[in-house]
Length: 539
Image 1 (cartoon, rainbow, N blue to C red):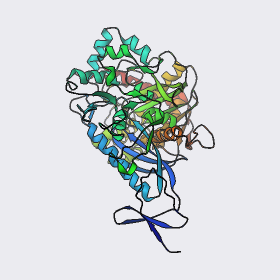
Image 2 (image 1 turned 30 degrees about the vertical axis):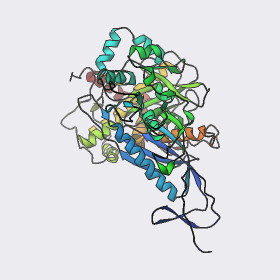
Image 3 (image 1 turned 30 degrees about the horizontal axis):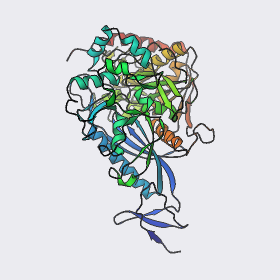
Image 4 (image 1 turned 60 degrees about the vertical axis):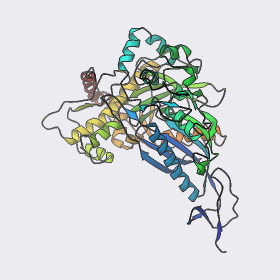
């Protein structure tokens, strides 16, 4: 049989009928690529994260087929301030989408739906009339609004915020960032002011921007702004008034799963018409991607920060000390909200980057575990990576990072091991608080995020908690959650069925030493935490 050629002039969202046999298509000028005789349906997940932007291609079985990645520039104009360029975020989203789309076309994949996941509390102000950002985005790690939080605390409004939103009064969340942007006058000349988290900024741009873009968010992201009423499932007018934020500037809240919009042809012709069918915050996306569908199931993510989330079902509990309550997801219009108990440590993988880039103790992140394994213990060295304050269960924005217990014999290996131990200790502190609040023991913890590739970290965590630690085959659980939700929203997949559930375990770590022995180092670390508090100084 001779070789045939066809020219594809349609988009990836349209089926192309091809007879059986081996054919070649022309995805670009002058390029001939052999393809299979049948299109394979895949999903795209856009992960607009803190340190980079990725587009992942995922098949309906949950296998990650391709990743396109670009690093995101971090801006630190003052101590405690962290900013991103909104235009750069969109440029990287489009670049990674287009790169992934071209490879998908060459491999005869058909993109059937797209999910968006994102760094949650990061806040951007922009003008919907012009499409221009009004300032750099303020990142979730940013601590510039600590004084505003103190002022509000002195006014006695913390209890109202806590009971309404499930959050604590802390610079971490979006409301004080929005208030700060407004107080600086960035919105004075905006014809159509928008104040949002990054998911809404990405969605609005992909669906047409100032030419009809969809301005929306989902409950998982809205519940991290400190403006969302957990019980009513809507924006809180009293809280918006408290923070002087106009409700009309906030995004429409839509379910986490279900068709939200489509890619505009004017924005990205190669994906024109493809449905955007899920939005979910990155940590809730990881909870869903880890198949923690039942109340009581929990996961820990070791990403830029560390985040522990536990599914607590559809009944809203009382606020838990040292933890926050958020919406995990809403699976369609009219579906009940599923809630999650959450602990957050602001620095985890960022501490590894610090060792690499600032101290230059390692050349690459992958070098950390081998270096740490050259010693059996950290010899009393303790690292508290509170570079941007302490999160759960302390929530102290004025804490700063420390290294204690140094001796003349302390070297690179002891510091490397102490950093890995600190990542485990932070999660231990959050899980302890979670177990106390939920009054039910934890039997298994599912882990993900880049640092969880270190078996040393997973084993230390199992020892610390005295529970099994499960690591999945794919550590891309955040993107898997977004993609799975998009497939669910389009009716393509039932993730709750045992036969089609995308999550699969790769390793299971069993506690390897007596719990009291394992906890001795943790008790010393808690003492180091107390020494780290109150070290921040005014700019």
